[in-house]
Amino acid sequence: MADSIQRKGQCLCGKVLLDTKVEKKVGVCHCGMCRAWGGGPMFAVQASERPHFEGGEHINSYDTSDWAERAFCQHCGSHLYYRIKASDEYIVPVGLFRDQSGFELDHQIFIDHKPAYYAFANDTTNMTEAEVFAKYS
Ligand SMILES: [Zn+2]
Ligand SMILES: [Zn+2]
Image (cartoon, rainbow, N blue to C red; front, side):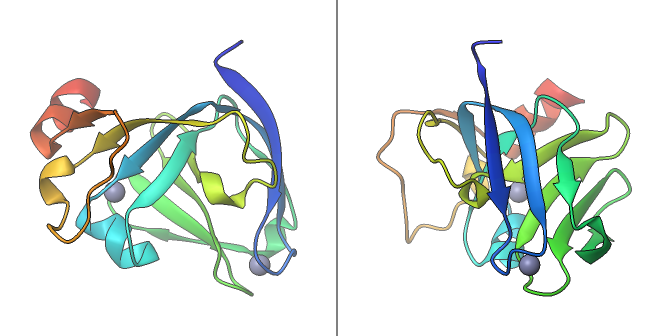
């Protein structure tokens, strides 16, 4: 599929490696959970398949809601994915991938939760919390 690209990546310490096909379109999430998790908005891409991980014994995950979990390397703390459990969808931080070419900033979600002290100049599709829940539920 032309909208997807194969990318390899790893956590900061290198104990967890991943290899997966992901969408080219990068989304930014401004929600309070993403900002608490990473210290800023999350830049991520949807995996087009279940990602292949090596070093899975180093992956820990945390249920952030009834429907989703967030995973990280338990050695270095790098964030590895956000997973929607019911659909088994993986959303992967784009910064994990070694090759950053081919990606484009496409949309920003929870734009109504974005703090006033930053704003991205990219021309993106922006959705509020209400619009996100209307689209995906
Ligand atoms: Zn690590
Ligand atoms: Zn979020």
